[in-house]
Image 1: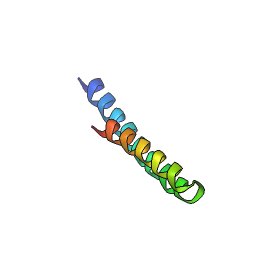
Image 2: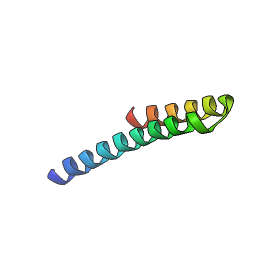
Image 3: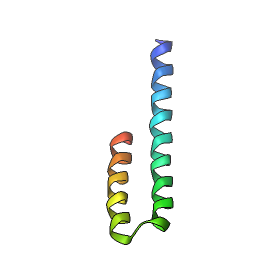
Length: 54
């Protein structure tokens, strides 16, 4: 049982870390991409973060 709890904690930590990384990528992309490209990437990253955090 303890192993399952530990695995769950690692999975939650991984999902939250990945979501934060996706948000950071969006911030960097804002300065480097054209407006249409930025909005497309923003939508993809938002859906990815939403899917990860459920």
